[in-house]
Length: 470
Figure 1 (cartoon, helix red, strand yellow):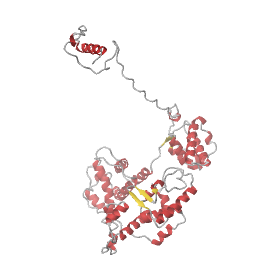
Figure 2 (tube, rainbow, N blue to C red; figure 1 turned 30 degrees about the vertical axis):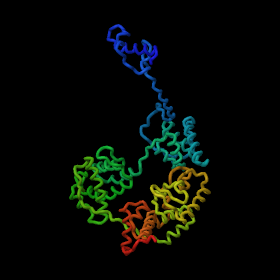
Figure 3 (cartoon, rainbow, N blue to C red; figure 1 turned 90 degrees about the horizontal axis):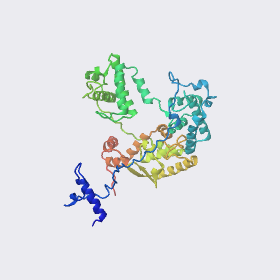
Figure 4 (cartoon, helix red, strand yellow; figure 1 turned 180 degrees about the vertical axis):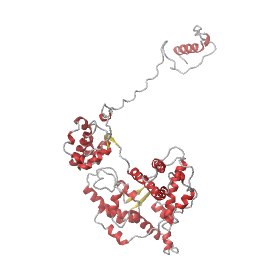
């Protein structure tokens, strides 16, 4: 039952609900034949009170930007000038920077030096480089263009540490042209202007992709270089005969320009097809002259076995890194990119953990792994890099070793791909060409695994039976 106060409230609310406009308030009449129920405490406001909306929480005040990002009045340069530090020398340049402008960057440099175990010499050189870069700026402040930091090489100062400090502090202006763009500009320079413009459109779509129809994903720089390199001789030949645009190219021109046969025809056709198909899809050209032009397929290379003596010699190398890399490739056949990104935590309890696969390590690999880890700990006891393979340049950082370092560690006459293919061939020989076993063990598709079964047939292994399970 409702209390007296509750009944009064309900009667008052019901009378208010039934009250006609401009009529006196009647608390008895609307409640004779029943009442309309309401949710409690939804209208409990005093007379004349206006309901206040709950105040929204005030957003946190954005942190004040670094002083080098605050604009200030300055005299704009008429044209950019590249600093010539070699002619001036190092003397006195570091004194031009104002102490208040360089102090925050020096604090970032000290933090990075402590975190990555820089030597005192590396910290000193980075500090001097920062002061010089700020001193040669128009207003004496950051941000600093990355292209100007490259000039520090002329006076024998490190570039990588200065770039890392500026990037960490948010004071770096990246204005360097990627190497792939310089390569492309050099290749299309001899072509007519209109043809070069059309190829530039193809190049941009290939590099960045397209989010609008027709959509496409960005391609790697290697793919772009290969496709343009295969098509460039034909494009130059068309330019020599007076063709100014790719819109002038017909199907007959493509047939006349393609090589007669072999892998050269397949590669040239793939390069031309990549260019014309994209330009036609984006309506840069009217037609695709390579449509239904037979060019053949790339001949797949047949894997061959390696010299066992050369592999054994590298397995017994005095360099622990070389011995371990060769052992991993020769016994388990991982890809080079997998070796580059291999972490210390990926090797546990005598097993190698790769994406989608767990490989028990062979005894020779375990022995060389223990030797390498001992050498690694003795040489770089304070290493912060989580990768298994590190070197003099990466032990203070977090990035993996470069591909060139692995090539040098493997040595001349051998490559990671050859060692991997040799290991897969040995497995195919041991299993009688079992494609399913090769696919499961090395993470290959069925089509890729079939490449390693063909050499068995050529070597008269067609009659070989897989080893029995007994």
